[in-house]
Every structure is written in structure tokens, then in C-alpha cells.
Amino acid sequence: MSDIYQKRRIIITFIALVIFAGVIVANTPQPAQQNPAVKVENQIVTTGPAIDALKTLAIKGRAPKTNYSRDQFGAGWTTTSGCDTRNIILNRDLINAVVDDGCNVSSGVLNDPYTGKTIQFTRGSTTSSAVQIDHVVALSDAWQKGAQQMTIENRILFANDPIELLAVDGAANLQKNDGDAATWLPSNKSFRCQYVARQIAVKQKYNLWVTQAEYDAISNILNTCPSQQLPSA
Image (cartoon, rainbow, N blue to C red):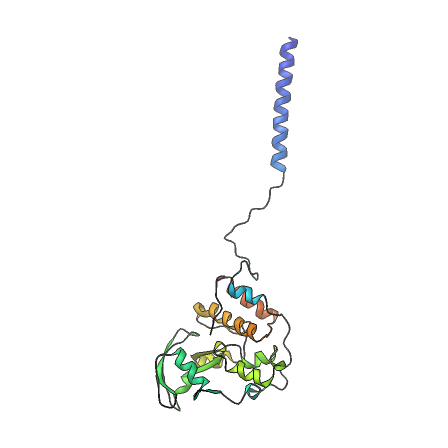
């Protein structure tokens, strides 16, 4: 009987140990599992050319708009080889652009990046404004984020730099006014990644800063297109 009792005690002890070990495992905290499909808002979750360039920009508040005027960036468009900047950009951005002997674009078709509309452009006193040349980084925005420290010569270069300019729908350009990415974005959502990438490229080239709200807005857009490239021109 003693041998049977001893065996029973061993079996009972073994079962108790197994149950005890199971309780410990069940109550041990497990590492949180990350869902790779979860998007983190207001945070850059990867790297890419535009995202990496954004990280190099200083984040500061707006400087006062004191003494700002369009003339701080030159009195209108500059001329290169007999062609003014407006017509150079129209010739670049319009399809089937027709250029007259005076280097003026007289007609063409714009696939407007801001609205997605197709605009038939015809030069004329009542029609030219249908297509306008937008400063992608608005001049007054640039003034409040570093441009007022530039020389007048560099501000003129800035205002006429092809990387800073796009031919766009006139009404959309007026609606944008002097907004940055925190206050205005193109209604054509498929262009927003390219739009903010161009703003980054301009601000990086001319050592301009962004506000925190602007940085966050651009970050959120680039989260949807992390491989976005910077424009070259």
C-alpha cells in the first residue's frame, strides 16, 4: 500500500506543478503586437526624398509682415533672352503652346494641377487671367519665414525661379492668396503630394522655415506618399 500511496503522491504533485506553470504563463504580460496596417497620424512613419528634406527645415513662428510689398521681390517679372518669366512658365506648362515673335504665349492648353480642370488658354485683355502664374510659396509667406533677411537680388531670383512657379487656374490662385499648406491645399487631391514637395524644395533651396502647423500639415500629406520625390524645376 505504501508504494501505491507514494506513486499517487508523485502523480498529484506533477499535476499540481503543471497547473501552476500554466497559471504563470497565462498571467505573464505579453508584448503588444503592432498592426503594420495602422497609420500613425501627425507622424512621419518612413523616409523618402521629400520627407527627408522636410526634416531639414527649421520650425519657427511667423515673423511680422511689416514692410512687405510685392516690390520687395522686384517690380514684376524679369526678362531672360527677351522672354519674361510669365511666358517662360506658360511655355513650359501649357500643352501645344503657341509663341509669337515677341516671345508671348498666345494660346495653349493647361491641365490645371490645382483643380484638375482642362483650360483653353488664349492671350487677351479679358482672357489671359484664366491662367495665372502662382508662386508656390506665396511671396508674403516667404517674407514672414526668412525672405526679409535676403538681399533684394536674392528675393528677385526667388520670385522668378522656375521651381517656385506653376501655371494654374486663375480662380484657384486667387483663392489660395498667401496661404501655406496649413491653410490652403489644391482641391485636386491627387496633386497635393507634388504640391507640398515643391514647397519643401523651394524652402530648402532658399533657407526658409515652416511653422509647426505647416510642418504637421505637410507631414500628414506625405504619409500618404512616402516615396514622393522633390521636383528638379
